[in-house]
Image 1: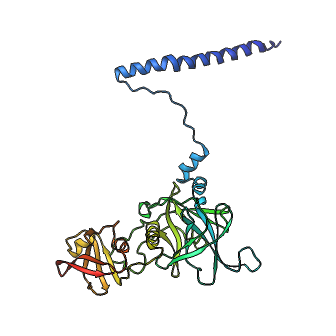
Image 2 (image 1 turned 30 degrees about the horizontal axis):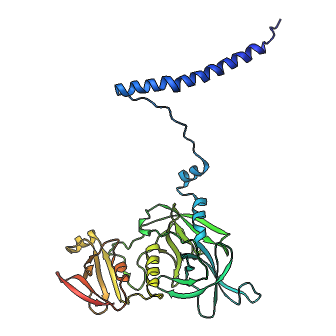
Length: 358
């Protein structure tokens, strides 16, 4: 004969266990653990101190797994972007004929925008759609073939300006996000990429640099032929590069060169770079040791205009000793056209000064 189940006793037993568990937990946290902690401090004995549990949210999980939170970075960046339409016929009319669309970057809150110069030419109109979704007729202020960018102006104020970073601070393998608009700031695309090398003009016996074009770019693990004007930002939403086209090549312009172009433009509302015909190699400590130059960094002239000769080694400009960050091109581009600079060189084993007109 089966004994009937006493559900009341079972319920009371469960309630007693729960009560004792709660009291035990309170005793441990309020009395036992503090007491043992005090004893461990007095006797210098390591003791585990209870802490709150570690909870990883989905947002933190994204950061841990990918190194960059796409949604956060896009939200930080998209307000500083503009869709740029190069077209014929008035925007929004049946005569409208699109030639090209690209992404622009807000450079100043009063409506100054930087956009790739490709496709901008006389007879074509330029319209910008800002983050408010409204179209604005844009005036082309300056074109720069050296960096492949144009400066345009729209009649708008209080715009969100993108934050400026430095490409040279990007580490090899660092995750970046390329962000661009698709015919409107409400439709934004983004893709993760990794830096494959430092964005510097590196010393080398093999690489020949020409002063007529930028000598360093941001190198990534994939191309952006579909994202002209895309901005490259780091995990904090700071600009480190801009996809542009120089000649026939689509490339990622360094933020340093973009800033140089902006400073050049803001100086007198036009862009004019020093004109110097110069082909050279960049030498670092390893190369200068092999060639027995008593300097750790500089450029070896391969061909040049008046004032320099093949084989000259330039190690300073106007007293500024050259290095990876203050390389020859960046120092020269900071000078105004027509000015004269003093170059410290080694020629035939002898140090001397040479004056060069820009």
